[in-house]
Amino acid sequence: MVKHLRRWLPLTIAAFAVPSAVVVVSASPSLAATIDTSVYYVLTSRHSGKAIDVYNLATNDGAPIVQWARNNGNQQQWQFVSVGGGYYQIKSRLSGKVLQIASAQDGAQLTQQAASGDTKQHFGVTDSPDGHIQLINRHSGKALDVWEWSTADGGRISQYTDTDGTNQQWMLHKISGSGTPPAGSIVVAADGSGQHTTVQAAINAAPTNSATTVTIAIRPGTYRGVFSVPSSKTNLHLLGLGADPSSVVLVENHSAGTLKPDGTTYGTNGSATATVTGRGFQASNLTISNDFDEVANASQPGHQAVALYLNSDRSILTNVRLLGDQDTFLVGATARSYVRNSYIEGTVDFIFGDGIAVMHSSQIHEKRSTGGPLTAARTPATRAYGFLFYRCNLTSSAAANSSSLGRPWGPDAQVLYRESTLGAHINTAQPWTNMSSNTWQNARFREYRNNGAGAGTNSNRPQLTDADAPNYTPQKYLAGSDGWNPVG
Image (tube, rainbow, N blue to C red):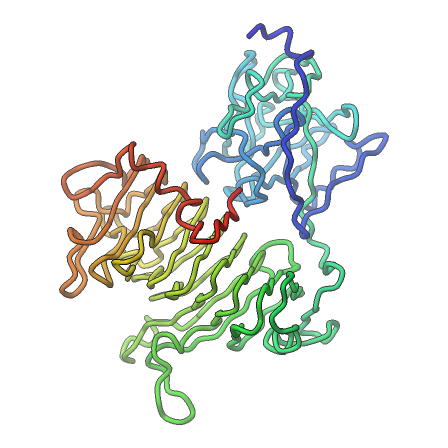
């Protein structure tokens, strides 16, 4: 393609839905003058409709910046930091690093780097037609650009001499942190400014067997206490109104071995901070935590302490943090769950259960310094799909080769890590382990096109074949008999 003709290529804008927690910045005579340095933005290309994105949830210097279908994840959120003179550094919410162009050459790729005083990290904002902007690099004077007019996920973000083509025009979408609940929602606020002061009270007040989404909007704060969404409360959406998921924390500290008032113990399932069985459940922009401390309670038996017991069919978690130690996230037998742009942490078997769960573009963090198995699936032999980790980022501060991808709680456990970045904590020689009499060799454990220090291939690392890969996508895992497709 001839580069100097790019200005005249036809405009293609991908359609996308704007979630309730996001507002589009309206056109103004000088959009550049309205940049708000206190918030984060998603930036979408006028040409492709896709968003500027940190590839594969990377947090390292030099990670490439690409375009990807807009999903409003942290890897697509950017803050403008003024450096004076009308220039900004553009900082990633995911990594804390800033955008940088390495050279003055046409086609130089955009990367992320630790912030410094280098003018290669400085960008001016100028107006383009119809509510769009251009981003001009201070060092080179060139404009950020979707290279070669790509419309594909993963298309390179580069710089090129300013033509003001639609592939150099960007729209700003402000991530709302105003605390304004969507119209018609049930509002929870610990200070009494809402309709209810606890999440459970709002759930109890929600209509039963609703055919449409019922939003419970939760104002920033820490809400201690267990809550449950019973099967009669369908299509319930818990929405955190803070600037990020850490602003709304739903937490309790029961473990399997904790004594109840009647002298019995909670058990694993009963230890959950949140228990959800209502069909069509959604949660977004909040934290569900179990802060039982297994180290401080080392002498107590029963360290399993569940943050979320999810037994809801057609459930979606978006931009959510699930925090715990052992057994953080329990996926129940009737669950079909889609977890996207989220963060899950724990120590041992912290994603486990019988149901179906797709973790998409999410961070999976092993927090124990000695490492441990990440998953314990118990997929029935009659079910083709269990857990899928798709384009996820596996992180830990544990020693190299100290953790495993999982172990089979049931003999027919099904787990696939696909196109994900595996940290150095994953044991490259033996990434799967046995559990009781269940052997990893007899389980349905696979990998496919992973990368990172913990990735590799050997006889202990069964790989999905290219021929089978089309049958192991997020859409296939979630389709069921009703064709459900929350992925798009």
